[in-house]
Length: 361
Image 1 (spheres, rainbow, N blue to C red):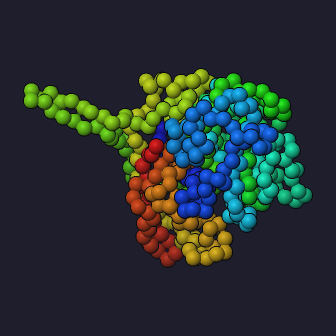
Image 2 (image 1 turned 60 degrees about the horizontal axis):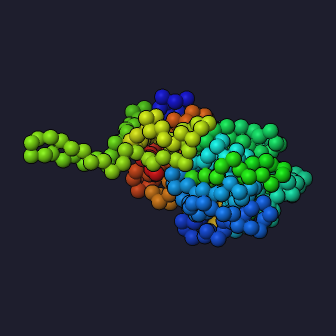
Image 3 (image 1 turned 180 degrees about the vertical axis):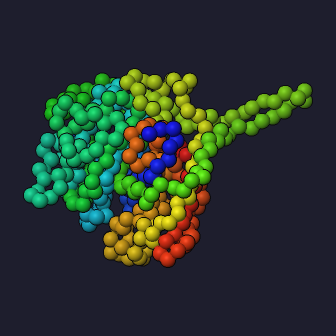
């Protein structure tokens, strides 16, 4: 939509950073291997942890000569509802430059190096090949590859796809990368660069916010000093978020355009909005101390699925001011600008709440 036309917002919450932050997962749950399923890939710069810190400018560089490789995340959950997801975003990549195709799969057994050998779906069970045609929605920069079941981004920058919740066979997630799917013996066109991999569940706010939304762009980090003669000098620590591997932040380009500083949007965005007349079931879980998934961890309310899974201000989240948007400018990484959830009951089983978020990098 663009023009900062705030409709019904959507927050994309990362499952991996949540599990890493509270100690359920460690870096050992993430493996990065060549297509043979046993050989570690060679990094020209960075390391695997750099792809999961939600800082797209802090990218890892994977040597082109690795040829096909895959990243596997072991959730260590034996209950399917605890590990379900419905989106993946890959931020700060150079997939157009490197000629990268990718494929996403999930299963209760560890995945193999060759995605063609991945188990076929069981009868009556949702297809575990997420990037298969018809199993996902292409939101940002996710053109279907000429090879079935793969995605070949048309631009450098970032990619976002969504799908219906996968409620079964999701202990392991496998993200495969190849220059030539099916052969896996071809070098990439350039070293592969990945800034951040975000996978988890999105949650839509119950409705659009009230009028009188406040949006500001803060050009922070500048200190002014005056000279004896009355001149003013500025010392600025940073004008905005750092460059991504191949583009300006949140931009798409078919070439490497990270030097195009003239085209970057500087400053830090802040959105301050209020939501009136939210039902208690949309705001709170049935029981915030329950071990029954549907009553807390896998509920559908803002408290359990948004505030709790970003751990207040601890984790950033991908945010869109319009849940249906395919416009680049409607997205960004944000944190809560205050410490947590604040709501006021305005009628029987009805609440109002504020949301104050600030751009982060």
